[in-house]
Length: 256
Ligand SMILES: Cc1cc2nc3c(=O)[nH]c(=O)nc-3n(C[C@H](O)[C@H](O)[C@H](O)COP(=O)(O)O)c2cc1C
Image (cartoon, rainbow, N blue to C red; front, top):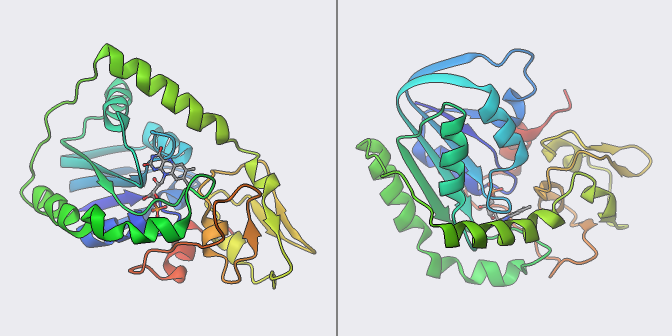
């Protein structure tokens, strides 16, 4: 089994690790000079939902990659609302010649700092039944369960369009320019290393470029909690407890 994954704060990496097999980081693969053809009995993709879509890098990867598998799946983790994400995703993938046998979303911990306070999100963990839902997904994949194609009504399409526009509006490639680095920064370079788009350079100061994926890995994973948003709901940060910082560095580091 091969799993392609994208993660900022470890939710997706935890899911990928629990499913098992050969784990391949999308931020590494997308920058490979030649994206190979992959063949395995099972091929899966695990990614977070950003504004009701996969992160841009995951979308770009899925357009480029080719594979052959007897069974394929996509798991999208999210923190609050997954409305119609899979329906849209499935439609886009099919038009791109990719069919997934099994598509599921998994409610995990919300990490979108402009709208949510991490203290509150962490308190919600028991109510989300993450473990039971993940176990069910593991069983399904084990038994090669196939999900029925999703349909989307016209009314849902309209609702999805407007809610997507609202969130997409806040996601832009230059948004890291507004991140504020405080005096707690010791230039440890972790922010550079967890950035999946190599958008951060630590020189005299921490410098952000114009290619931000909006994943917030740099904010969440700074060991000194030195990077902040002007409009963040709280300064508390999240890394999934089953994942070590070094694993996210290994997954996302573009500085060799
Ligand atoms: C930029 C951004 C946009 C997000 N948009 C959504 C969303 O539309 N719906 C939702 O439920 N969660 C959303 N989230 C939360 C993540 O999907 C969720 O926390 C995910 O499990 C994080 O996975 P990771 O820990 O592997 O990075 C968003 C998070 C970020 C950073």
